Image (cartoon, rainbow over all chains, first blue to last red; front, side):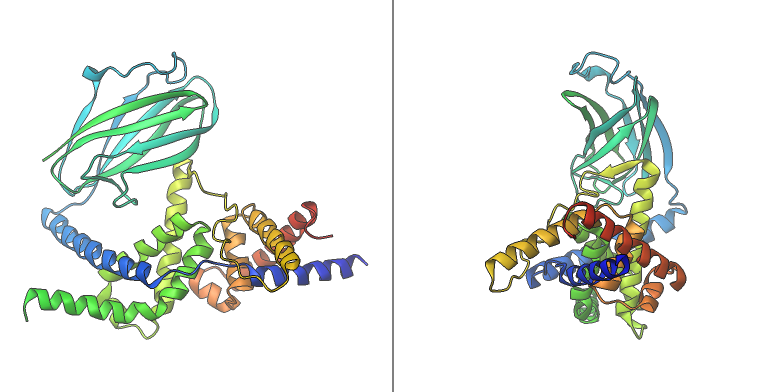
Length: 178
Length: 183
C-alpha cells in the first residue's frame, strides 16, 4: 500500500516537475546581453594585457578596522565626518578591503548594503552601484572582504550600511585613484 | 583590415556562434540560479567570459556544451565565494513563485488554479533543497538532461548524480506531503 502511494506521488511529482515553468527571454534582452558582452569582454581583455605589462595582478590586501562596537552603542549615532578613513587605489588594479564589524551579540538577518561611487566596482558585480546581502553576525569581530576595482580615475566614497531591526550604522571609506 | 572592421567581424562571429544556444543557456541560468536577477547576471557573465575566449570557442565542435559547462562553473564559483563570506544574497532560497506568472494554463479555470497552487508548492519545496539536489532534479526531471549530460556539465560522477536525484525526489515528496499538496 505504501509502495503504491509512493508510486502515485512519484508520478505526480514527475508531472509537476515537467510543468515547472521558466520564463522566456525576449530577443531584445538577448541583443542587449550580446552587446554588453562584446563591450565588456573587450574591455576586460584590454585590462588583462595592461596588467600583464605591469608584471603582477595580485591584489593588495589591507584591513580597515571599523571596530566601533556597532551594536554596543546607541543606534543611529552620526558618523564623524572628519574621521573618514581613506585609501589610494591604482586604476584597474583589484584591491581587497577588509571591513571588520564588531558586535556584542550574535545577530541573525542583518542587512548589509554596500554603495559604490561611479568608477568603483565590486569584483563579481560589474556595473552595480548598490549591493545588498542578508547576513548573520557572530559575537565579536566579523570580517567582510570586499574586492574593489577602480574603473575610472574619479574615486569617491564607498558606504557600507549595516542594519538590524531599527538600528543601523553606516561606515565610510574614501577612495582616491591614481 | 582596419581595427574597426576587425572588431565588427569578431562581434558578428561571436553572435553567430552563441545565438543558437541562447535559449538553452538562459533556461539553464534560471535552473541554476532560481531567480531572475541572479539568472540574468549569470547569463551575462557567461557571455562576457565567452567573448574573451572567442578564438577557443571558434575551434569547438560543440560550443553549446562548452558554454553550459562554463556557466555551471561560474555558478559554483559564485556560490563558493558567498559561502566563504558567510553572506548570502537577500534573494537566495526565496523563490516565491517568481517567474511563474506566465505559466500556461489549460481551458479549465478550476484546474488551472489547482495546478498553479501545486506549482507554487513545488517552487517553495525546491527552495528548501540544497543547490546540489535542486540543480540535479531540475536538470534531469524538468529540462530532460540525461545523467551523462549532467555528468559532463557538472563533473559529478553518474553514481553520485543518481543518488542526489533519488534523495531530491524523496525530499520533494516529503515536503509536498507535509504541505498537503500530495495526499
